[in-house]
Image (cartoon, rainbow over all chains, first blue to last red):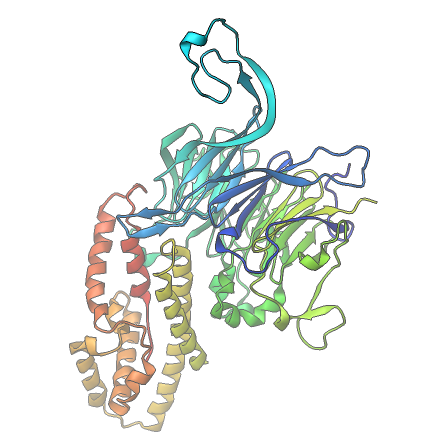
Length: 448
Length: 173
């Protein structure tokens, strides 16, 4: 079975499945807002703007047909968050799911955290495939039996039933955030997790809902002096005392909770000096980091800003070790992208299982695979045109200017409404989930 | 360049105002980015204005100081009749005050020369007289906000967020 080795030009990606409605008329509630594999890769969760969570499960492989990789089918669907109204502030709280994070599996049930702008919920997803039958006082349909007709006593027994997957909210972590929650991250200690909003980061215990510890607070005494906000935060994959948070100014701070209870003072500050030749009206906006992710081995972290992906070595603060341009051809179009608000799009990024390849989305339903080991990159497209089973994805090329070659697409022809903000990579295999506006594409490595 | 700067300023401010009606409440991050863009555009615009004024001064060297001071006094007396930008600026930094003066001066110069342009140039989405009152209220809210020891549970977001962008909202006419 393939380990998640090279994903750039070594691996050929082919279409596996697409989930979601086919028609172009997209209901706003169906817009996918987050995608996340669980730790084994068996389950794939998506959250949408309507507050729903859909979980897909990988079918156990068909040993007789090794070419046919297992498929993901709907396992559970539930309404995680509902729209709320804050009467004090006269503000509506959106039900959109901002993030989903799985807990490592401890028993038969699965647990995940899902969050909207204000409230985090812990959901338990469990299977039921047996039910008790043979009650003495009740009929099978639930009606009570007439006591006078009961003449014998029997012991109810469990009998098999059709598999039912139940999702139940086990904890609701509310009222912890004044501003909009942008990140949640489960700690490697499996007991705590952090949640981050624009100005604060809170530490929660999974069992305790009525209080949390504030570990980072960057709110200035005078809000007029506000210069940066927190954009993303994540716990280190192995060190339970370490977490990082990124800012709208393009900096990343690493904090050690052993140093002090309040981590306002960072342990490390990762910042690359700005290139003065690239200065423009929009320099501030495009340097804002939209996502930060630790590598699986915990030695590196990756950040995504509007135009690039940067890989940082945790031991080197003054510059990233690698920088990849995602769509440099957009640099000359920043003004138009500002006008249509696309410049504010928050792209996410992800690592493959062995940290050799990273992936991020772009416009026109393009996504980029950046192979670190081979220093190569490829642009692929998630489109309905390439939906034949096991159809290999062809690399796409964007023509920045000048003469457009055959098979290239010019920058002006790109559809900026078709954006891929959320992607996920299976933790062990070369299986990726790519979310377009309302569809989820699953691609797999071509197996010969 | 300053035409572009002015356009971006107007665009940014209209975006800031449209944020207020968005579902889910004001986004602090978006407001901050928009405000930073407004400021960057404003700086470029003022630099261009300064250069232009410096050129004009050279051309008409005997422009009397009195003429400059008069409109400044007028503007100080009745800020409400001018565009709302000036009311939001506090004299925190001397540099900013100097810019205020230059802005007021050029604003009033424009008014004296081409009064009819005021309505044409001024974007209609901006509040006029309301801005001054807003500043006072916002200052109170901000002050109150700081006094309340906010442990993150008292959701006072609305006040600070409404205060924040408009205090920074600078418009050139």
